Amino acid sequence: MYTDAPERRFVPGAVFSLQVPPSSPWHGKTLELVELKWYNTHPVAFFKDVPDRSVAETLIKAILWVDQDLAEQSEEEDAWYDHQLVGLSVIRDGVKVGTVSLVDHLPAQDLLHVATDSGEVLVPFVKAIVPAVDIAAGTLTVTPPAGLFEELPDDDELPLDESSAPE
Image (cartoon, rainbow, N blue to C red; front, top):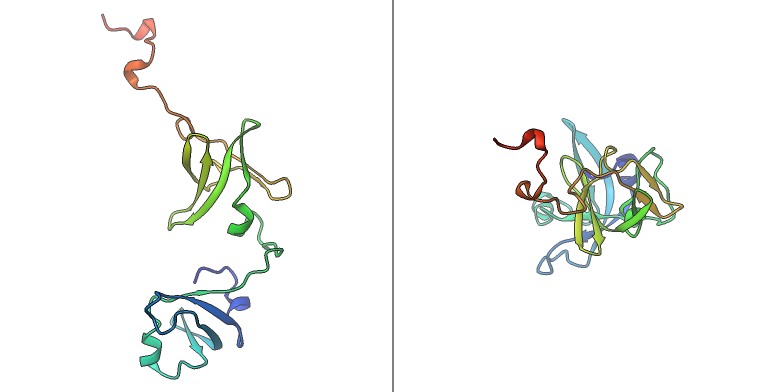
């Protein structure tokens, strides 16, 4: 489950859109939840028109989607929906450096795709690098490490300090 609120999403009567290959008999269809039960900390969903295990097996690897009210705000502090982040201006030292184009959800942390004039930059969505998100202002502030948004010179291009020059 990729929801922070299964008790809100998985209620009897909830309808899910299905993401399945076009060749699947479920392509273009929806599922209505009858019941969600927990067995040994694992959720097991029962759906209308899925009467037995053999029919359920035809849904293996299907992704369930819910319609989201775009105006709804997250109840958690420092939590946003992807649609709120995509399109935000990325600000570094008071200057716009790009725009959030996509959010990837990875096991370690989320990753922001930032479209810049010089190409796409992948920014780990962690507090140390993204200290502020202001949805109302349409901005996301970054404090990236050197080299994330710009090329760093090669070691042989760096000027030598006289105290470190070879003898």
